[in-house]
Amino acid sequence: MGLFDSFLSDTMLKCPVCGTELGKDLQTKALGQGMSSWRVGDRVESLDVHIERGYVESRVCCRGCHRECVFRAVIIDGKFAGIE
Ligand SMILES: [Zn+2]
Image (cartoon, rainbow, N blue to C red; front, side, top):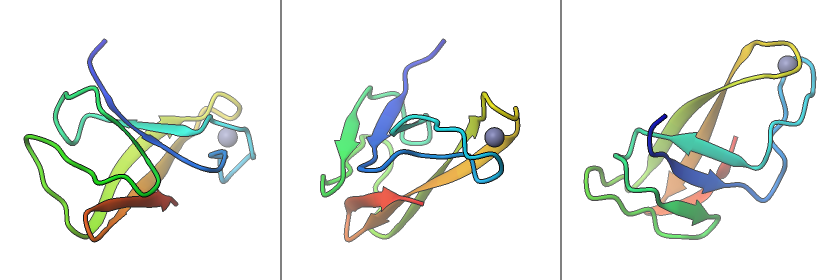
C-alpha cells in the first residue's frame, strides 16, 4: 500500500484489448505522494514535480483479460486535460 495521487477522468477508462471498464480514475505515484486528486481543467500542482506540458503515464492491470493497460494523463498549460 502507498499513497497515490489521482487523475479523475470525465469518461470511463476501458481496456483497449477486451473493453472491460476500469473505472474513471488513474492513480499515480509519479508526482510524489501528495494524495491529491485532479479533475479535468484543474491545475496540476505537486511539491515534487511541475509539468507545464506533457503527460503522466500510469499502468492499470485489466481485471478482465489481466493485461497491463497504459494510460496517459495529459497536461496542457499546467492543467489536466484528460486521459488517453
Ligand atoms: Zn482487458
